[in-house]
Length: 136
Image 1 (cartoon, helix red, strand yellow):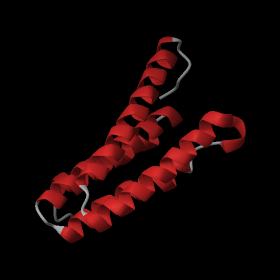
Image 2 (image 1 turned 120 degrees about the horizontal axis):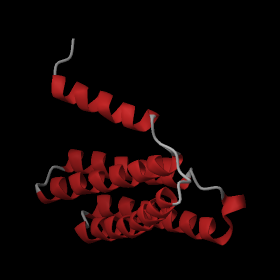
Image 3 (image 1 turned 90 degrees about the horizontal axis):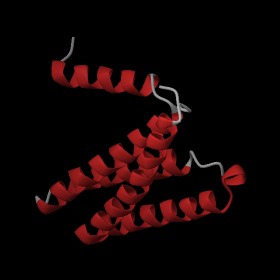
Image 4 (image 1 turned 180 degrees about the vertical axis):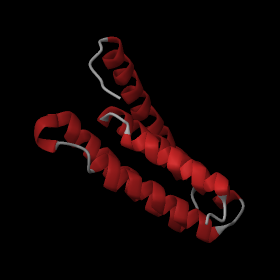
């Protein structure tokens, strides 16, 4: 039934993690996924694997635009949400330029930005966990 049982297990494990996660944890999974895709893109760029590089960059851009940016509540989030939205737009534009120009520096810039924002989310989650205010 499955051509690759390890991949099938990993997919089931990932889906279980997603279904049982709090909204905060889901955002963390998006950050992790985008960073992993950028790691793949950088590796493929260095190995001159153009199609794989483009696929990985598109995946990262989609996670940023359709996951992270789409999860923002621009009305309730005020200036912070507006600033994050603008930053996510900037990241997607940088990724498109990185793809066209094979610019590893742009990939690393976006990865660093995601890392900084992701770390802030992790810290916020740790504080919420210590206060007992998150579920999942």
